Amino acid sequence: MRYFPIYLALAFAFLLGCNPEGRKDESAAPNIIGSWQLFERGYSPGDRYVVEEVPSDPVQLIRFNEDSTFTSNTDAYRAFNRFQLVGENGSRVLVLHSASGESRSYAMSASEEKLELRAHGCIEGCHEAFRRVNHTIRE
Image (cartoon, rainbow, N blue to C red; front, side):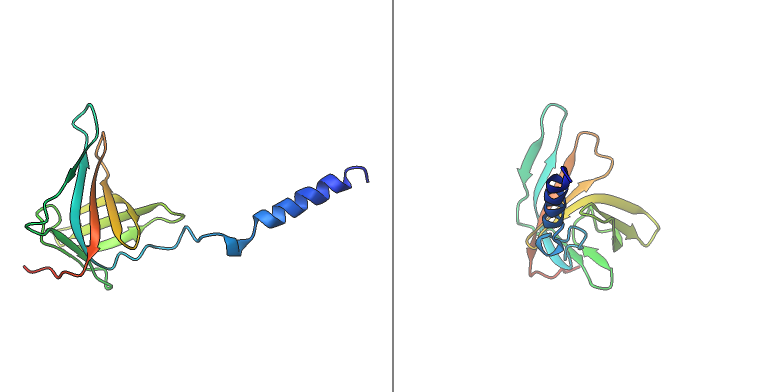
C-alpha cells in the first residue's frame, strides 16, 4: 500500500502520454501527386557540402500521377516512367522504374510545398529539392 501513490502516478502519466488524438500520424504517405520544379541541388566535393540554386530557365520538372506513372523533362529522370513509395513510420523511399527494367531509389522527405530526394549511393551526400508547381511537362 505504501507504493500505491507511485504506481497511480505512473499509470496516470502513461495514460496521458498515450493520447492517440494528440499524435501526428507519421506513417501517412505525403501527397506527392502533381508537378514539381527542381530549384536546388546539393553535393559534397569532399571537403564541404555545397548547395546551389538551379536556374528556372529552362524549367526542369518531374510529375507524379495518381496511376503511379512518372514523367520528367530532365535528363536525369527522363528514362523513368513509373514510381513506387516504400517504407513506413516517417521513413520513405521513392523508387523510380524505367521501361527497360532499371530502377533508382531515393530517400525522400516531402511536405505540401517541397520535395527533397537524396540518391542512395551518394557516399558524401547529395540531394535535389523541388517545389510544387502547376506546370505541365511538354515533350
